[in-house]
Length: 132
Ligand code: AMP
Image (cartoon, rainbow, N blue to C red):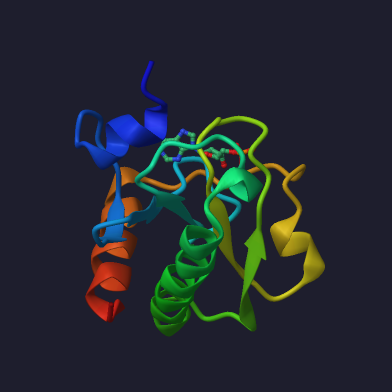
């Protein structure tokens, strides 16, 4: 069965899209640690990130770099933190999280409520800044 991220990539379920190319897709995390928290996924559905082909893994990080630069232009922050968890969704993904302190990338913390309007605004503003 296709993963929820494959369904997002195929447009079968909605997402707040940031960008895509032929191999990767970026969209806002629906339950974010904070505004701008974005997921970068390979279109190829592989569960564990370190099972990806080495070239795909390297290129995924370069794609993530372009997304991170765009997020940083929109969200005031010290830097974009990077994390890989993968315990919830069995489709490899990189979390990009705007951070100022270590606590901002604590996945155990309670998540802020973000309205549909704010998600839409963030996705529009960040996607406009992406240069692939
Ligand atoms: P993990 O697999 O532990 O790295 O966590 C998966 C992440 O995917 C969580 O931060 C979820 O909030 C996020 N997530 C799950 N379903 C969706 C969805 N439909 N759209 C956007 N983000 C999602």
